[in-house]
Amino acid sequence: MAVELERGRPKLEISRTRAVTIRVTENEFEEISNLAKKLNITKTEAVLRGIKLLKNPPKQKIYRSLNKNPQKHSEGVIIED
Image (tube, rainbow, N blue to C red; front, side):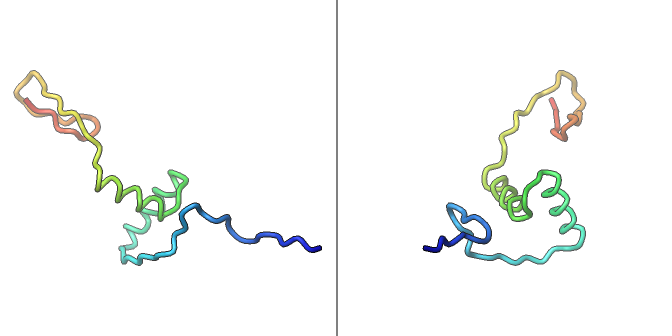
């Protein structure tokens, strides 16, 4: 009675069977690769997270300053009166 061992990668609950190929510049490729490595995720997951952000952008609160001069917030949000 032989027992068969499973080989290869574990199956995902929802397997990814479709492929998308895109052309990017060397700089864009490096950005995707570096970000994925920094976040410890795959390049695919990095791109999919970007797509989710495009579909559902985070809501930002806009704060108004008391003075008349627009200022730039440290995170890049424009604060103006």
